[in-house]
Length: 352
Image (cartoon, rainbow, N blue to C red; front, side, top):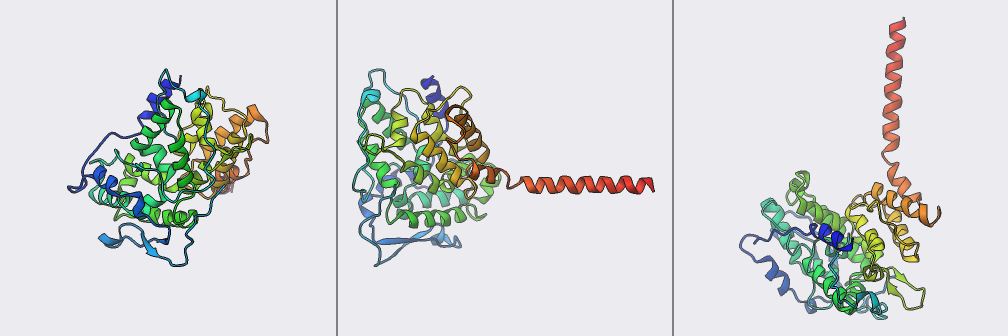
């Protein structure tokens, strides 16, 4: 069952590799060193009006703190070797000190996904974005989960070796990135505005180009997945990341919950556990559906109801998803009332 899941969801990673205007994208990604990112900068979004303004940029901030403030995503699957120690391995607790940079080599999003299906302006924009120190400093967990082959390799290595230290350190950084989570969230808002511009990827998005859609989904879900990945299980007092717990389990039911923001529904035969992590994760999703257009409220709501059927009616709070699902309902109702009134008026005229 798990192998079938791995093969199915492996297709999420697009295998098209190309050069953007003669530049080797993967080589450019690798040349950006984590040590070149400093924590004394703030992020500022600039309008994409010329080549140098294609992406938001960093500006110096002398008032920025030198110590990041700790905070208290869909999902990458990888095959587990038959002789794996993954299910018996002891998961490391979340680091007590947030690292100032991600562990090397740093995985990058969309490392195999840029293709000639993109328009030239969208390809230039994404290539510039992926080589931006600002973007790589904020390093979206939401995009790593869905579009990064390098991240999938890290997951595979952890599953096969039972050593989750690198993933643990990576999650510690991406959940509390430099220069700060708040600045990165604001930065990603600027990136989204630039991405959907017609001068960048707006035409590709309207045409339904998958790479552009994946980029929009990951960038739009940046904050909710950053908050989700920071969730920890404190049951034993160890503070282990909920995502790592789901990844370690032999059955993928809890791991399925991490693919919901990517627009992938909970499989009909799946029954996630009634754990504190499941509750915290689903409640995180529901709290963001009304303010995050890239979250599919219908998919989140359906999964939450399925889990509530097993775990109890109050396991997941539906207030936020209900609000998101009913945003369009009043409009539809008003049209219905208007239509009935129109028909009634026509009948009245006909009877006169």
